[in-house]
Length: 128
View 1 (cartoon, rainbow, N blue to C red):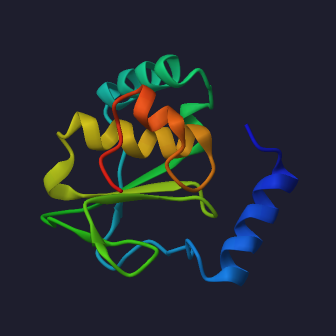
View 2 (view 1 turned 90 degrees about the vertical axis):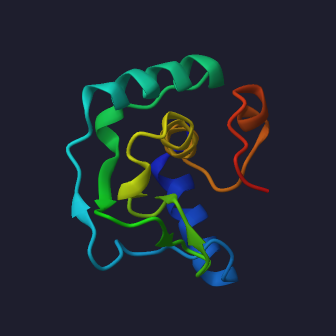
């Protein structure tokens, strides 16, 4: 897991290069008290990835009745993890999508940008 200094450097790099901009919580997003089921998905993802991070380190949001949200690169997506703010935003229509929740959980567990090998190992490469 990256140190606080490494996380700050990654966030600064993303801002300076324009790659992986750090989005804010979109309009209409509301805090989500993650269901216990999300904790189980998180733990399963940690085991698969071979990395751990406290579930409580991440805040969850949803945009009710939405099928997509605007990600950090301006494209519509079903969900995203904001590295700089440590939050996951889900389009409300996908709250019951275990693969999507696990995909975003893996981003948060690894706490770094991109889709490294753990996404393949855990069969969670839903993009690129």
